[in-house]
Image (cartoon, rainbow, N blue to C red; front, side, top):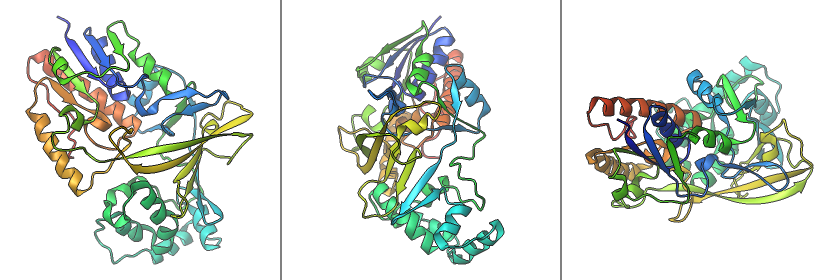
Length: 383
C-alpha cells in the first residue's frame, strides 16, 4: 500500500527524497516556505538576460559518479571550471593558492619544487596539532601568506578572529605547487545550462509529488503522514526550544554594468578595510552565453537574524552544545527524519547533499518497508 510522505523544504535534499519515494509509488507532499524551489541554489533570468545565482554562486563539482549521473537525468550540465582571483592591496592574484600566486606575491620565478621548499621554510612547523584556523594556516603556508590572503577575509566572512575558528574550515581550501588555477579538483564539474531551478523543478516533476510553495507545514500536520522528512532548520522544528542556532548570512549589493566588469566569475577582496568579501559577476557562470551587459553582486557577510536567510552554520563551542541538545530531542522523535544542510546544521556542498539524500531515502524506505522505526538521522550531524 502506498505511504503518505511529507517533505519540508524544496532544495536538493527535499527534492531528491521526494523523487525517490514518489518513484517507489508513494504519495509525497512537499512544503516550501519560499515562493520558489531550489533553496539557496535558486537561479533566475535578470532583465539583462543574464542568469543570476540569486543567493550567491553555486558550482556543481563532485567525485561521486552516481551523483553526476543522477543530476544529468534532469537537465543538461555544461562544462565549467571555476576560477577565482584575489585582491590584496592593489594587486590581483590567482586563487586558489598555487605556483602563480606564490611567485607573484614574493616576486620570484620558482619552479614547483623550489616553491614547495620555499613555503615549507616559512611555515610554522612548531605547530604540531593545529586547533584553530589561524594555527592551521600558519602551519600550512606561514605568516606572510596567511596575513595577506586569509586573516582579513576570514574575519569578514565569519565575524570572529581566526583564532576562534576551527582548523577544519581551512581544509576545504587547496594549496598547489603547479600553475593549475582551477578552483576544484573533482573529476565531474559543471553548471546547468538553464540554471539550477529547472533541475530541481524536473526532480519534483512526478505525478506522485505535490508541491506547496509559500507554505509552512506545522509539526502537528506532519504527524498526519506515515513519515516526514525535515530539511528546514532543526531548531525551527522544535520552535527554538534551546535558542536559535547561529548562522552567517549574506547581503548582496547588485549592480548592472556595461560590458565586462572583472573578467572572471569571482574576485575575493582580502583586505579587512574593504567592507565586502567578494564580487561575483554572474554572466561568467555561463560562459556559453553572450551578453552586452553584466550583473555583479558585492557580497557582505554578517550574523544571521530571525528574518534572514541562513547560509553558513557557525558551529563554534556554544553552537555545538546547542546542537547536541537538538539532536537529543530529534532522536526522541518518531515519524520524522532530519537531513540536509539546515536539518543537520552542517556546511554541505550540493553533491554531498544529493548523495546523503539518496542514502537517506534508501535507509528510511527500507525501514518503512520492514515495519521498523526509521532513524531520526541517517547521517550523524555530530560526526
